[in-house]
Image (cartoon, rainbow, N blue to C red; front, top):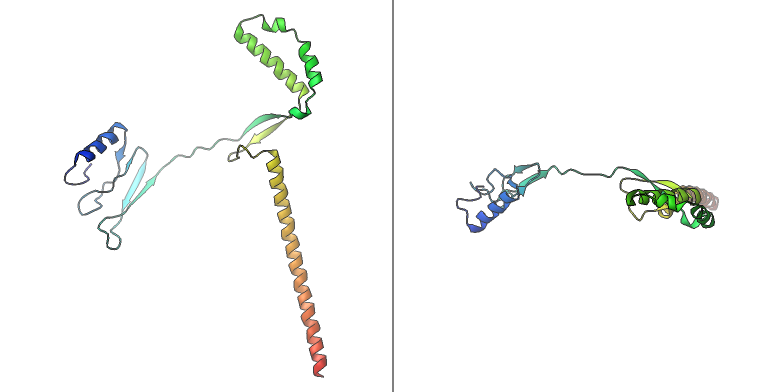
Length: 191
């Protein structure tokens, strides 16, 4: 890095740190006279543009453009259980009729899978559920109640806009009628 004619100890340490982290100095044009004073270290793909000095400044500004990858979650489906609508008595009867001895007479991992499968099967039978699509950008707290409230808000807003337009139209017609009436009154007074 040719930042200036001489590199002092802090400059050498900065260069050593940049090298140890795999960072590159990407400004290659002089930013003050024949020296590079703008320090831009990165490990990303980037481009720089050095401009001529602005106003009375003796430094040239540097524009840095980075290519930063943006990762977005893909939409996915998940099952949401309605525990408040579950048939717990039916589920209790189902689980009490299971032959647990047979499910557990194997190695621990298989036994654990058997128990999980039995419980999931009981849940599928006795607890209502639905598939929910989690969309990109959805907030974790934005649940069905929020979704319904937002939909209601949009519907009411559209209604309000239509009503406001109708009221404005009615008011303008009333104003026109009032002006016409005033004109007639004034014309009659002048006769």
